[in-house]
Amino acid sequence: MGVESHNEVNSGGGSHIARDRNSSAYNNIDAAPMPKHIPFPEFTGSSELINEFVMFLFITFATAMQFINIYRTIWWVPESNTYHAVNVYLIEPYLVAFIVLLMSRRFLFCLIIRTQDLTQNITIEKRRFYKKAVRYSFTCLLLLILGICAYKIYLKHTFMPVFLLVYPLVIYVLIFGFQIESFLRSSYEVEGAYFNGMPMHCCSSCPDIIREEIDVLRNDFNIRFKQILFTSLLNVYYAGIVPCLFAASMYYNTVWVYQNAFYVWISCLTMAFAFGFPAKYSDIMHRASLHLGYWSQMDMRAIGGNSGSSSASSNNSNSTSGSTTVWKANTVWTQNSVVKFDGELFSSCGPVTVAVPRNSSHSRFYKLFHNPTTMYMALTGIQASIVLTGLVALYYTLEWHFILSFSFTTLTNQFTFFKIMRDYLVTKRIYTSEISIAEQTKAFNSN
Image (cartoon, rainbow, N blue to C red):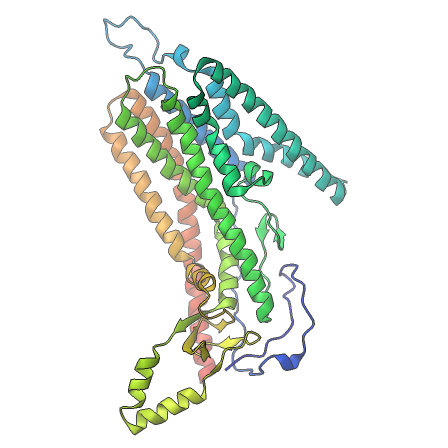
């Protein structure tokens, strides 16, 4: 069973090139329409500049808290000869400059690009040239200053601490290559159709165009996910681990320091998820997944056993096999269609299905985004646990530097919790209504 596939692109879709195809190349069955989407509400969200600014403040303050945990003093003791709460003179100034400059790179770059975007009466070619010039000049200047700081640190330490200081940059080259854009921005436009940094959904009924769009969206998702993991690990490495590697004194609570680093990493991870995967982005993926569909493999032995048990079941099996056809790449299959692919039977799930059977990437894409509410519900639970843990630890904490550290991280995590909870409630309301409308439409059409 199939649905006629037209060569059409929704006016709000992306810039995919529609190819000329003969209408005879597609099966013509008008039983099932293409999926209908509920308009996603336009609510105020944080810009990339604000997101990078919040992340920069969080990492900078977390780094300061780690230095305080390491170099704190017992100035309140009557017999103590010090009158300062922190031994600031033991902190390496070039190390602080290295960390702050590296952590602020994305915020500074977005700030420079933002000033160019506010400029009026400038052509597209000049904008591209300006962004390219800023990207390379800013990167060269940044690496130059970081190199000077590393050299100054090398003069006071051995080679190994300096290697541990710069080796995450080597890991970056191994993971992302020499892509400067990945170093300067959390998310950027890869090849495909984008608008305001977001990929666009093409409401097409052409199977080839749908699968091409899925490849673009899947590539974008993988890049964002890889960026989130690398960014969170990079931030916690420089905010929580590097200060310990360069500690001038080993008389500090090692267990607490590394627990704090783990807590900062979880906070950075959820914050990066909230920034990288907003509800609007997941809705684009959700719409594409409805057009993609999913194939569920059927057990042919069970079908064969049922068909041989009685003549009635044999007739039923014959009717099933009569409605089964070989899977075709240029066909849009209706829901519950049964096809044969490589000697196996597959049943289609979803409103329509153009996915390739046994394609693991198509299956994962549909399972993850056909209902993004599940993803936001899991993130909400994790973030709620982080906030609750911070509040409990703050209640039982007695030392002043622990109280200061937990107070800041818990307050910042509440901001992230609000964003994730809002995305969860919005997506739950929308997709519950969408499923209800789809079921009512299906029941009306069957009657």
